[in-house]
Image 1 (cartoon, one colour):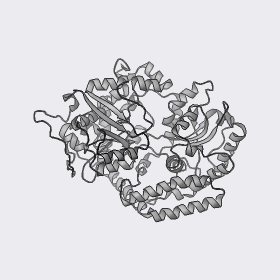
Image 2 (image 1 turned 90 degrees about the horizontal axis):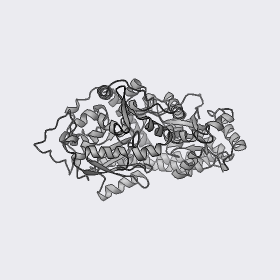
Image 3 (image 1 turned 60 degrees about the vertical axis):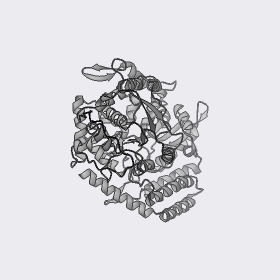
Length: 556
């Protein structure tokens, strides 16, 4: 994304959010008249005491700042931050009275939260990836509150700060909205601001790439040639083996939809959802990886390395090429650039392309956002929970979480909030210390609204900006509508898709390690047959219906 420094005042920023949200949903009603249809729920929020008068133009969290504890489940096993140690978290607790206990899954987030649903004991707040199966289960299983109902009951200011465009995007058939996303972008917002939120890149280690003469990595022959050069001349670094290739998220992400985006594989043709996995260019590149494996140019470590191994190799510049989101490199690249080998950091370059040589079509941000945050019906404090979410979604809460405490971590410069120089220095050179001690910037991203916070971001270091700019340039701004078309939950079609996905996770490594192309073809055809048996036709019908519904929403 391009983090342009917005010149408008805070009021204009909020106006932009509302206008852009309404641009995506021009038929939306005013926030104050949001639908109040009640779900068939066994547990409704208690009525607000009659003596308390709620003002839809003022945040209700100020009505009660007494101490309260809220547990917050963050559905990312890698999230390593706590609440109560950093300056920012202490400041927010002191201000609102809300003390947060952050919980993360020890393994797979879906499995963890599903077990919690079975037990009937859920954390107060839950943030899960918008694509996760568990999200739909939480909604359909009546495990979480309708946020619009809580807001009407306890804090109507929520409608003002959440933005009706986003709320309408997540509104269910019964008229209720159960989750609010972070990092949500409408196409209008991206066109208007230039912020695309594109995060996908193809990265190479700068020094090795340049020493090789900047080989062409866009064609199968060029790709294989570069791997051969690496094997012949650069197989060791500081006494350890270089790993030729890494794909983030292994099969489900890096080697499937991410690689397909690099190849600009279409999502639809003539209005019909396209079967991307059978695209000839994609199959050609899978065969290219098979050839690389056969020649000993790559190994299977990129499919089996643990998160710890990936981190260790990345921190020590032991990968050559990576299909990797650039945001995951914001701490590593400055560290490598400051090392004894300052050119060992990673740069974005053109990676695999389709047979026409077309530029990549990388996923931009979309209305779904990244994670959605919900309030569970296990909470004993629904009113404090919705008021806390309202505070976090507001301009004030966004500023407090992103910038911290005025005078200590930020100051006003020419009438605009700005991180202090020492914070910027930490952001560039020691993110871990900045996050642990101060908790500013993106430490607590669960409710992050980029339209607000990006205006406060300092200029990025060149070793980060190069990756961001490259990704931004190849973003498919209108392509966000295609993300998340797959069925979720426990329906027959969702179960069918789950079986197909799991089988693909097993099959792709077999394809890459197949002894020859004939064996590859046989394995692939066998998978396609099983896929049909599992119910792939129903999956395609679901995707088509979902895409048509999304197009209709965008057109309203």
